[in-house]
Amino acid sequence: MTDAPDGTPTPAPVQPGGSAGSHREASPRQVRVAILTVSDTRTPETDTSGQFLRAEIEAQGHEVVAYRVVKDDAVQIRTALVAFTREATVVISSGGTGITGRDVTVPVVESLITKPIPGFGELFRMLSYQQVGGAAMLSRAVAGLVRGAVVFAMPGSLNAVQTAWNGILKDELGHLAFEVERHGQPGVLTPPPLPGPDAPAPPPMPGAGGGVAAGLGRHKKGGSL
Image (cartoon, rainbow, N blue to C red):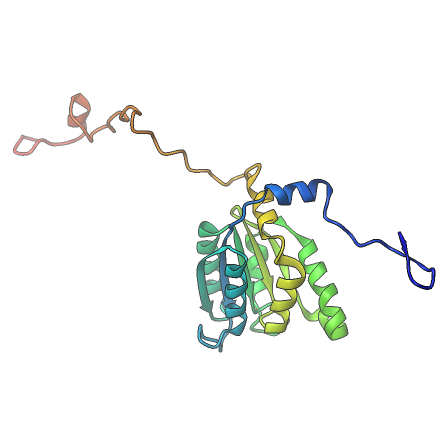
């Protein structure tokens, strides 16, 4: 605690420390990120939210491995998210999180999530309330783990995306990647390491090489039935 000029005690600023601080220090400096914009009207040329995210992510030294604009359509959204979670460690989606009839992003994301991260939506609505008041309750921003990647779904407006990025995600991408990957995730298979140059050749598959197995269940060319 410190004292204000009038002698009133004021809380000391929060400093990163403890396990979170050590985890940030051990976090990767570059994270693979995919960006999805859900909109019936935007194109890559008019997608100001997507352009903002891409510029900010790359300015932080991370890699944007995929970017797409899809319609407010559950099949298109699901297809894009499934593909992105195979390529990226963090997937950021904007658009389709409200309560109108065309807002279908949230139920799609929730159907894919294996581990919810409720704190993201809570923090986002808290920050939004400071800006727009009670209208913040209309946002159903959500986040969670999907296939070993972290997916964040937020509103599509540029102001909302800036709020989520600057207030929550900007300094946490490396930490998120560290937490997701350090123990592995149940049900997510890690590809085996590539064999070295001195590794023995794998045994031939039945019917694929020479020897007795090659003739089993196969007809020799020109042979009788």
